[in-house]
Length: 220
Image (cartoon, rainbow, N blue to C red; front, top):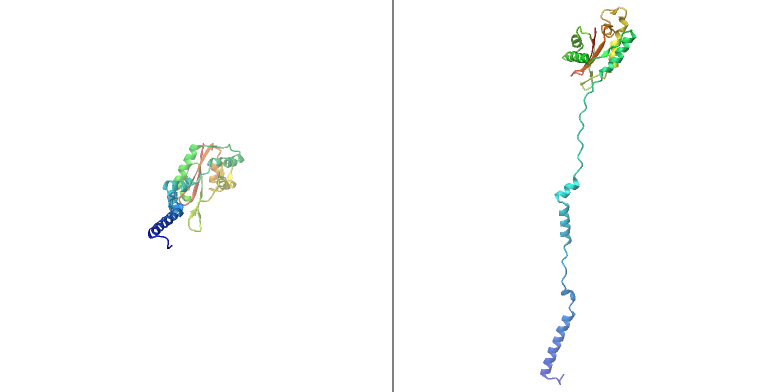
């Protein structure tokens, strides 16, 4: 080092410093100069997905339930076809050698008027008064009282009602058409009347659940 002059020393130091700087620049990692493409943050992506799922139109499509069917109409009381009373009535008549009667809608309408009139009080006496002297017969039945105090109409069939009317037959004299005991077979005698040719019947259910059955005969 003693043989190196000041100028040569200075040049040597400069050269060494330059080589050192260039070496460090060459060894720097490549990624420091590369451009990294933009990647969305996971939280932002999830937020967008949640926003889409909550879209009101999409939600309504997913959550829409099938429409419930319209409620069925409330059931109504069914009045029995009272024309079926014709058969048991004619069975009584044929057993007495009487001609069968035929059904009459006009007489059924008259019977309906009688039963409706009797329903104003809906008692046995009101039914008897409404029938009066007409060629008609009636049957009255009270409602059944339930435990809770409410009344319920009895379930009576047309055949049962006719069987109740038939009970007076034992006092009926088919030869004379009279009752052996006065008033004991008034109803039965109208059923068995040889002059009767037609019949029509009706039934009325009263608010107190009593019921009135009426049959009106024609031809006599």
